[in-house]
Length: 453
Image 1: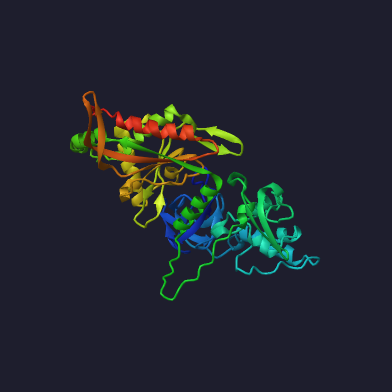
Image 2: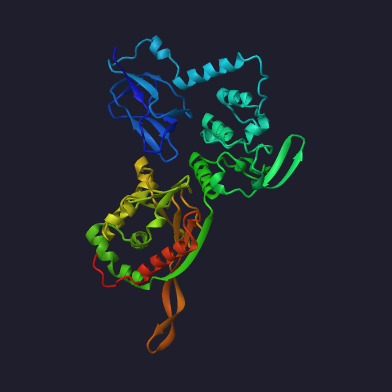
């Protein structure tokens, strides 16, 4: 009997695991080559995985909502066209489950330590994490304060080891005295507030920050966050903890740009089969400004600054569900305005139709978000980590404005918009952040109304 192991493929440079969300085939079903076999979800995007073989699905190793690592065997397909009787090979449990059972047995056999008490909040801790906590003398209340990076905030082995390596800074006895601004101690449960730099808080003091417990009233409706909303929430909270945000604002006169687009949009659509919006035009100006100020196109790794050679512009896109996703225009500096327009339209359409690939939302070096779409004149956007800056585009409005001429000043109607530039103050100072957004405005204001497309 010939059997093919179906493994979870690599789905991007930073994707190491995926959640099995839906098996599209049941055990015993016939499967065609390249036929969708299973739906998976990563922290980047949802995907259907095609079958790598033709035959009968005889075994699945993960249930729905289980998390599999890249390279794990998730299923077996028999290629002889029939479902065989279950063999010893097929009875093998997933490697993750086997390891968990071995660890659990080892913990139960340890008689010189009292077992770690149950979590009062009902939070799940794996046997391995509990074992490490017991060996290090970490009580359940302290364990609950550790921020988890696993599925649904679960504390992983990496999280608890990083917490221990950081000196268990949640424990007031071992916390650096200079970072504590106030502390009150009752019994053995210290309470602290800190002014520690966000960049140095991984597994540290910020783990002490707990969300308030909110009790729903009798007339309130409880709505469970979907998976994407949970990921967005975690990403936004992480970003504000990691980066000290500063926002600079500039008002740009975009009358020339608006007049040019109004003049060419019909001919552009007829020739290119695409509608030209303001987004690619403004994106072109952003790319030019990044070339002038390349230090906004960087990332931070520890104490190192990584200067990006490619200019990959992320464009925040609202989905029909109300969630947000950020597809990326790769090498935007190599595209002309027509190319940018087609790329922007394609990415936006793919996002709204749930057709983005994992690589479509990876590798961004700078992000643009259009708050003007919702009628907002400005915003204070949160940086899309690991980038260091993001630009919000406000609504374009007709406003009265002072117009200077050689013959004197007068009041006229102009098309204006606000640009809101948020940046990471660890590496982007006010001078750089402010000059960058001012340069974007200058490029927009100098737009050539006689430009050919």
